[in-house]
Length: 403
Image 1: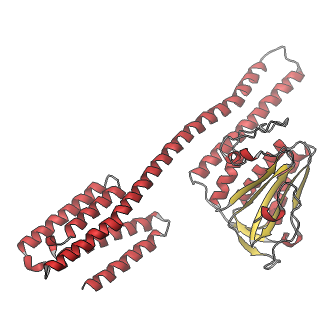
Image 2 (image 1 turned 45 degrees about the vertical axis):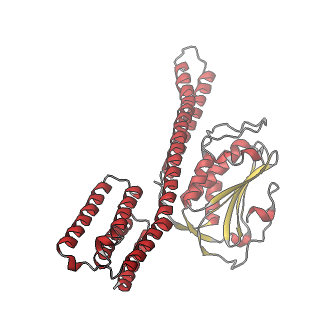
Image 3 (image 1 turned 60 degrees about the vertical axis):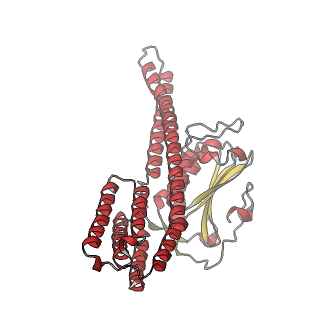
């Protein structure tokens, strides 16, 4: 009887674990309900077939109630505990009025052995589980407090950054009312209002994008597309802005990867490239901006390289934080037309795509951002061979960069 009972409960718990692997709330709720039902059936079975109130069953009931209260501190947990308590009372009344229905111990030795096994289990499994759970709860509390502080700092930074272009827009709009303005001054003021309006709109879009990404409200819409067509779209989107500078702008695709087709979210990938290239345009005054792709270790790696001022090592981790801006002491205005959200958005998008982004940079030599993510290669003519095309980017080690 005990063997059959244990086998049935083990299979039930395996099903619970299997259902918990699915991310859907419906599956998790069903798994949790199945666990509670199987646990209660098991405890009742132990009570009836294994010694009743003379066995460790009451102790196990109390431990189970404590675990529920500790691990599921929700409003409904009190009701569940009350039902378990009533269950114990019903079992005691059953044992009192129908003692023949409860299988008692055949010997005191058997009863003592049962208590030794159960108490050992409580100390070796339940107590460490509660201790570990308590540590997790403390960590979650500390993380929640940290997130709350970051949110306050985020809101303070956001209000400050929004106020700056708004003050310029309102101020120069008031100046336009002056009847003494010349045509040239009016055009200058209108240009300033337009620039700050574009800055404000871009800032609000970035804030909304980052908020949606961090709240996991962005859905991944996969489609099949060639890297070559994506790179052409990126080139056409930024060439007008590039022509206002003296920079050389090019795409870098090895011949063996030119016809490769992948399956991923094209819009999100384009946004990552766009943010990185826009940042590069802001900080680079001469030289080139290059974006490209490589295949290393059967994984596709994209990169954006610029010959800007570079980023000091002590700032390379911080640069991906919200509202973080470069301050390397150079004469280049690296904070122009930006509030430090572009790289945060790139990192959030790549986290969503199960990817990562790395930075290779040296001061006064330039920077290279390399990123990769989970994507399905639909068609490729290179077989198992990695791209042998030279990286030819001076600020990073050729072999280490795409490892």
